[in-house]
Amino acid sequence: MQSASTQPNAQQSTAQTQSTIRPTTLLLISAIMAAMFYVAFTRPYSLAQHGEEAGQTFSGLSNLSSQSALLYVGGFAVVFGLYLLAAQRLSGRLTRAHWAALIGGALLINAVLLPLYPLDADDVYDNIIRGRMTSVYGLNPLRAVPNDIANDPFYRFTGWRDIPSAYGPGWELLSGLTSKLAGDDNTANVIAYKLLSLIGYAAAALLIGLTLRIIAPERAALGVYLFAWNPLIAFTTSGTAHNDVVMAAFIAGSVYCLMRRWYVGATLAALVGTLVKFIPILLIPFIVIVALRELSMRGRLRYVLGSALLGG
Image 1 (tube, rainbow, N blue to C red):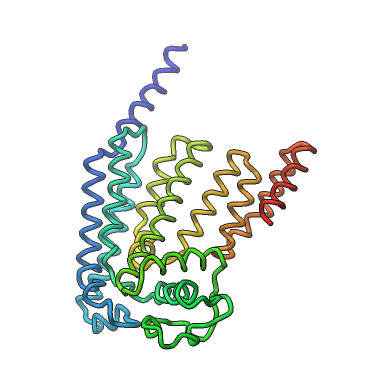
Image 2 (cartoon, rainbow, N blue to C red):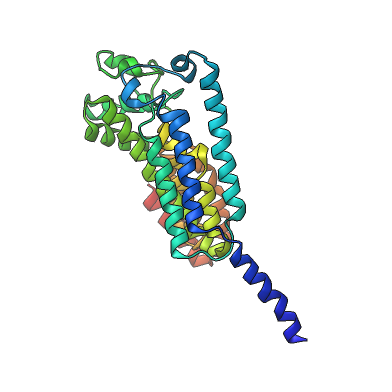
């Protein structure tokens, strides 16, 4: 009876291991996705060609041609189709070669999108000029507005000229440092902000994997893949340099600390994330509830005091 019951389990385990996609296939899929991004987006809308043009959109640069519309829709259809295809086959135990292909593929996809002009997204230029308000002019972007520095060379790229920053002081400090390092060159600033977004992207992917290794080890690789290879995340990170992924890194860090029962760390990560964008503050009540439920009376006191002092 014991032998008969264990045999199906062994066969199931073997089948699960065999269903894992090959590392070479994974790399091939990433190469096709990268090539599609290049053909449909980076080549026709490159930063090198259009970087000095302000406020450009897909429709403006493409002149609403049918060919560009086909590339736009078809490009996203192909990359999302390949993304879902690989997700369905990414199962079983992964080797180091699989992990190398997973990480290498993500790097390849993002590298192709780095030279893309940030189409339909003035956000990066708004971030640049507010970073310059901090680093060059010594202004507070939470109070001052771009109209106060209308002579700045980046002013013409700015979308929101008469309102202060909608982000938190944590982001504005990062933004000021990035603008200071990038200097006055347009392309250098756009690439610098894309790289800042990529740092958040890499941190979020790592923390997702570490969290899943705690709560669902068999899904760690799939979880990292679903985030890191998501075409929309890659496009808005390396393509258009949105800062949401920086905030997402702090959310992922907060969840990781919560799974490790580092309640003070979870609270602080959510708090720092709130200083980038306000959304992570929504996590704090849940963290407090879990901490107070799980800890002893002494532990609760230590958690409350530690979070209050370090948070302050």
